[in-house]
Image 1 (cartoon, rainbow, N blue to C red):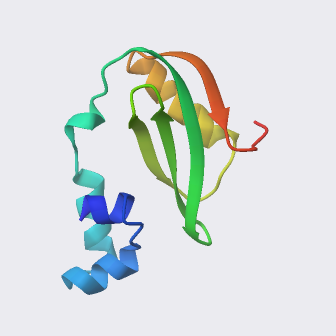
Image 2: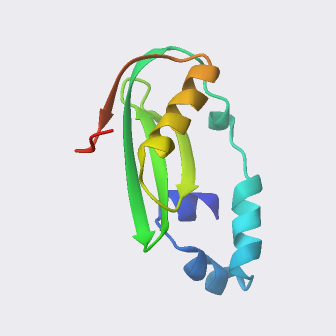
Length: 109
């Protein structure tokens, strides 16, 4: 379900219909899901960050390391603002990453 949600871009409503569960139950399961990639190995890297919205007031921010070829951070968001990017940066720095540069898709923050 997690992969359908993140990589297949399925909405909570679509997953709810598919699995016969409420959107709240689906969200709770997704919030509890953890992968080995949730514990990134700290390195020095460039980070690409971008937000994608699936509807008004519902989206996700993703921070990806092109050199490591994997996502290092993602979180559900309701708006795209400076605080969203700062929280992602803080998470990565606390995880031990040295951020060489951040590339943000046409967003001045």
